[in-house]
Amino acid sequence: MGLEIESNMLNLEIAGISLRNPAILASGFLGISQAIFERIFDEGAGAVVSKSISKYPMEGFRNPTVVVLENKSYINAVGLSNPGHESFYEEVSTNDKVPLIVSLVGSDPSDFEVMTKKFNKSRIIGFEINLSCPHVQKLGMEVGDDPQMVKSIVKAAKSNTTKPVFVKVGIGNTNLIDISQTAINAGADGITAINTIRAMKISIDNFNPILSNKIGGLSGSSIKPIAIRCVYELSKKFSVPIIGCGGVSNWEDALEFMIAGATSFQLGTAMGFDGMSIFNSINSGILKYLKKKGYQSVKELIGRSHKY
Amino acid sequence: MADHTNTDILRFVRIKKVIEETPTIRTIVFEDEYSIASMPGQFLMVWIPPIEELPMSVGIENVESCKFAAVTVRKYGIGSTALYHKQVGDLIGIRGPYGNCFSVPENLRNALLIGGGTGLVPLVRLFSNLLHDQIQASLIMGARTKDEILFEHKVQELLADNNLSDTAAFSTDDGTYGFNGSTVDLAESILVSKKFEIMYTCGPELMMKGVQKLGERFSIPVEASLERYMKCAIGICGSCCINDKLVCRDGTIFDSMNLKQLTEFGFSYRDKSGRPSYFVS
Image (cartoon, rainbow over the protein chains, first blue to last red):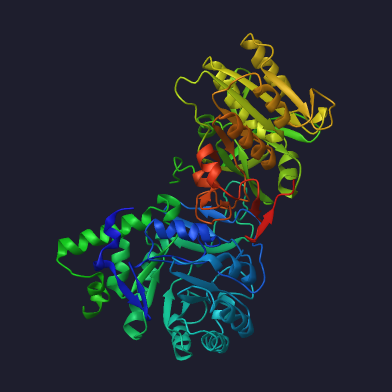
């Protein structure tokens, strides 16, 4: 681990949380094991978001659950596999060093009430509500497309925890700005944008959709321009912090998100190509850029595109 | 234009041959240049459309004096049974090879290989390589019962080709063939009178845990090929984690130093949801 990542120039705050740097592990990647969380933190991540945790354990879909595409992108339909909130509560009970955000998924407000109440006792820094998983019925996007449900869920979460609650939105049937507005009105402390986008891969050799679930979510470089646009629009409209997510593969991508208006950024897909060391290399790249351009802090870059 | 050099991208292969190994195990042979170039211990993700995708150790088979790639499968679950029933001419999808491989230290003089069941796939490949490099390798092959001994014919051919006769030994849990007992017990009986520089193992986890303990007792380095429930094989999903390691990307081979730190080795694994389950000895 290089010393660069400890630079004050990378420090920032999101919704009252202090982070040593803006590079956050996105939900859905590697996120079920405390030992892995600690390793990712040691590899340089500023914070870590868990896999989306549901009230009860979920096994997810049968393989193939991930398809690799040619342009640094994946389509996945893992199916929200997770150990359930009680087991995961035990898993993170030893956490004393990782800035951990627990991602939650559920189908009605009472799920979120139970889970936020439980994890409010954990040593975690906040929650991210997954309203945008595009490939599991009755969860994620299907909930996120229902404004009344979004309102009730965010309120249920907020009323049971003192920790910040972020809401992860995606490209669904409902307008991204409208659903974010609903979440913010209900008390959301920030917005993570965007989740994967519904997508498919079909074999021309045997005509089969490759994923066992047929439809999955597209992540990686392919969705970056869309994610940049979403972050730009959201950050221009709202004053709460926006966490950019979607196709960060290197420090240039990361900076683009911040200049578009993101307070920090998440990544995951790129780890499949470059391993966990990508956190350190992105932070190093950002730091070199800051020094070269004469900036004192990465915070100076947030939303710099807005005035043009 | 498709990128045919990115081995993460699914490619299709047509089955060239199916070998009946035991009443429950078959070897599926196909052409694939990337698999041929793989090292013992590496694995492929094999898609049996549209049923399942499974991690399988890459084997090598000689057919009419040409090298072909192969996977050896025991019919067990839905996916492995579907693969077992595939026939010559059928298409399967593959990606990889993935993972690291058994390491062979420079100037290695001898080695003890201990394998059980389909864990013998990488070990017999390694055994062949070691013999080719003039390293004195001894192989212990375990099975539940005589009919389930895997690759005996192949190993006997290897021994004959190298003018060896007694460096492979068999053990069966029910005593119907070879040593009556576990591979670990057989290894122990050999280690009492002979010193080895390294032990390689692949098979049921509690067997490998036994080999690790033998390694500690006799001060012999061990390399073990671990298995965990696997989804992506590319280091992003976390399903295959063991402590802070990912079996798909950091393994599947772990050495003594790593094995010692992996407190979950031989103790616990995660089910499909990620909840810990425990090995029962």
